[in-house]
Image: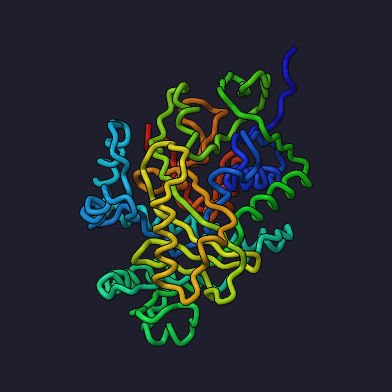
Amino acid sequence: MNPHQDDVLILGGGAIGLATALAILESGRGVRVLEAARVGGATSHGNCGTITPSHAPPLAAPGVPLRALKWMLTPDAPLYLKPRVDPVLWRWLLRFAARCNPRDWLDSTRGRAAILNDSRARLKDWVERYGLECEFGENGLDYVFRDRRNFEYHAAECGPLNRMGIATEVIDGDAYLREEPALREGVVGAIRFPDDAHLRPDRYVAELARVVRERGGVIEEGCRVEALLPEADGVRVRIANGGGERRGRDAVVAMAAWTPALIRPLGLRLPIQPGKGYSITYPKLGLAPRRPLVLKDRSVCVTAWGSGFRLGSTMEFSGQDGTLNPVRLAALERAAREYLREPPPAEAALEKWYGWRPMTFDDLPALGRSPRHPHVWLAAGHGMLGISMSAATGQLVADLMTGRDPAIDPSPYRVERFQ
């Protein structure tokens, strides 16, 4: 018997997949979301939940290769490369390094700024319109420095960022400490991004799932896709472990770091490397920072919600190694002790987590129709900014699928640039 045919199959139930499902539903089409485990249980679960137009500058920046070489073989550095023979990774790193020049940095910054700014505004609208209960806050984000040279380096970037519409405020260290009692002495300066926001990511994804279901979308959990089979008039999806098949008019692949393996048999290349990030979640602190912070000298993010507190970040290229590296976790705890007056005690940790960020070498996602298969669409490669870019990604994919004028220029994210 032929399986029932859905309208649009969304492969992946994280923030990107669910935001795309919601936008497609609002465009008048139907969706079925297929999630391998549980919604929001992978990359979307343990990040710090910051909504960051401030992060428009890409990782591939002038001077980064030299700093990265110093870090790569240091197990507790912000960037760590696990020594191994991996030709695919080394090709990716070479292409990343080639983009560490002013022209490519500016191109990626513009593309990232467009999708981040659209998503920031759209996400606020979604929180209000759909009643998303996700501890959303709009009090900005601060980069905090104890190293003066590092502070001056980043302060020099504020002029170009302001000209691109990314508001910044440079604050002297003494003035900053007077308004932020949670930090220890020794801060030499801070850069505030007043337009940034934050939310609790696990609750955001759960709320997206609620709204998708309320609007008629279907979500199947424990439904791992093992093959995507394009056909002339649609797609077939084969489910692992004897789960049968699902059919749809279109499919959107939003499987983060797992996307390349699924689409490779279709002759599609998507150079995503899994950049492993870590976080530790604690109960609410008595003396917590008033807004999210990036402890910039240590590349550690700090987010406090009404329901808890999280340390996160670091970048580790170790493939899809499914172990918690205690050295990387200890680096988060050490940064908290260095910067915070009342760092959380190690024994108070509620959860220690890792996840794989889908990193492209140009730090831009791949969004749009497959150049080979008219019923296959991609929404992957968001790096560390999946939550931040989710609402704009969903709307852009929905606009392209329905033939409407997109809210932002889709060309920086075109899939064809990797083919």
